Length: 276
Image (cartoon, rainbow, N blue to C red; front, side, top):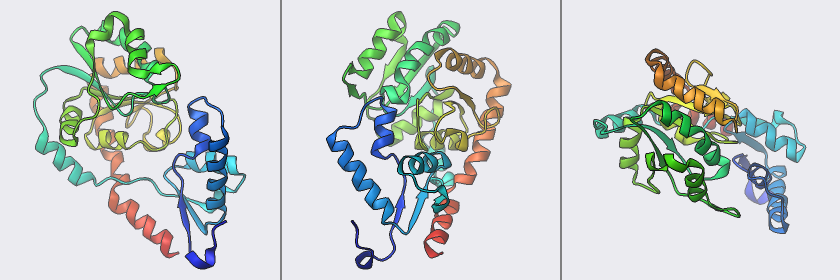
């Protein structure tokens, strides 16, 4: 147990705890996980304050630990909107191809296998389109996720590119040139990749899970679909690609909404909490 008298005030910020991590990946808690879980409980119970990027994370964590959400202050993660947009403008280049952009780790919990089922009808409907996945592939007990995706993609695999890890400037270039950004997670807290896409004013298709509905308003600053539903995901992507008016509306809405997550606002909220 942490001795408060030696540490003063302790504030714990919720991210992905071990219980939710195992739950999201469909696994069970082993001995090592239970030890980590006990340590997390001790940390949280010994804290004088708690913060969380989303209400969803606060409720999930408090539900598992059987504590009240009233003790948790929701303060979103922040992004320096104007400086980020300046970086995007500096590296913006004319795209040489038409593509949708899928950022983040390539793993089942991020919706990679659902995406592999959703992409073929999208690619069939748009002959000149390709899909670009940026991030490292994660190996699971069933094999490497990229390899599992390629098997599901079948004849469409040639129109899907995997970059692996890339430098940030190259990432910004790829983001800037994308038609649509897709975040198909089965569960997510407050993905920074979504904030980046919102800063870029991109049309975003994401899943209605975790903190995503707190980041975007469905039909206003993005399209939200049910996690794990490949048909719904494909339909939403096609809607964005086929309707320029909708695409522009959602991109503008995303750029407007991301301002509430500007680093100045979130850091000020954090300082007020620490001083209270």
